[in-house]
Image (cartoon, rainbow, N blue to C red; front, side, top):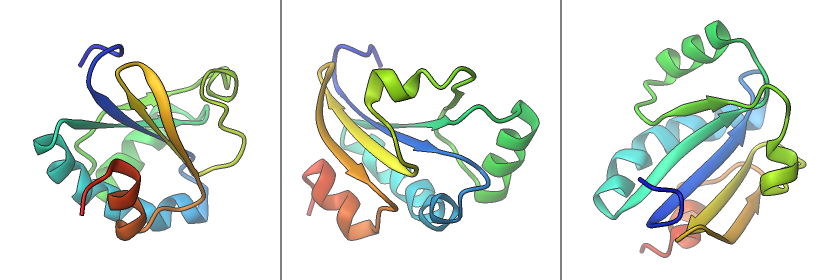
Length: 114
């Protein structure tokens, strides 16, 4: 997906974050449904080692891409100050920001699905 087109859900997290680990199974399951509705999920880890991120992705069966934010530039680009934080981007424009762990119901509301 080109960043300026379509819809993407960026989930900013860290593998050590308890609330992040709580929401991850729901995100893993939802990502498969969301892609069918044109919503691409992307994880953004906050500066951890590739090995830690791979182990986390394997543990939770994540099929969506995960980027590692080595220099914490996410804070400046997406305004992510607290994790987990989920940012919905539609056609290159931030349209919603959700701070804290998402529930399935919260995710559906965020992306406009019922």
